[in-house]
Amino acid sequence: MNRKHTPFISLSRRKRRAKTLKIKTLINREREIWGGLFYDECDHAAAVASGNWCWSDIVFLGHDPAVFWNAEIITANVAFADTVEEAAFNEAMLLLEAVGKQNAVLSDNSPDNIIGHTLLRRSEQTYSIFNGLTFNDFTDKRALEIARDAPPAVYCGYRILPGFASGIGLKMVVEADVLKQTLIEATIQDFLARGERNWVSDMPSPVRYAGQDICNKLDTKS
Image (cartoon, rainbow, N blue to C red):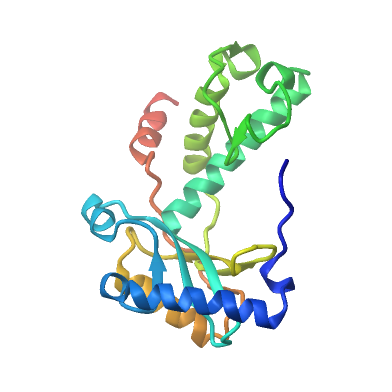
């Protein structure tokens, strides 16, 4: 049975302050690794060495001593990939629903069958509605085509996410190929300087899709 959680912002100020103090202690304890402005559970050395550090879940303090931010920080490239892949998934689901075959892919609507908008790769059945492709192959193909033919605009900025039980949720999109500690620190400082509010850049961010080489191959086949 899932236990209902109480959103952080619904707690009394005393409880929020107590939880924020624990985060402050954690950040201070790990300051030799993370610099003292934020904390990230990932292995810093491994993330940097990978050369592909493009997202992180971090916590940092707000100006209010009863507030800490529970943030996901991602690059614009990751945001772009998430957008096109979700669009491809939704398109595939609409096609299945149109021919009454949704139940052939999903046995029910439980979270066990869907993880992060991606079907578990347990069904290799092909479908005529997908021109003989499996669900996963079709969505991969469509994501590449969307990235090539109708790329969505991606904007850097900050979006506050309500309902988190641990701190106040926040999504941060930054214009960079990879994350760096100095970049995360600068992004946090900018968010704080803007008054800890939602903000979106006026200009879309240039992006590079990981499947760009495959997109180029699709061009040669069209």
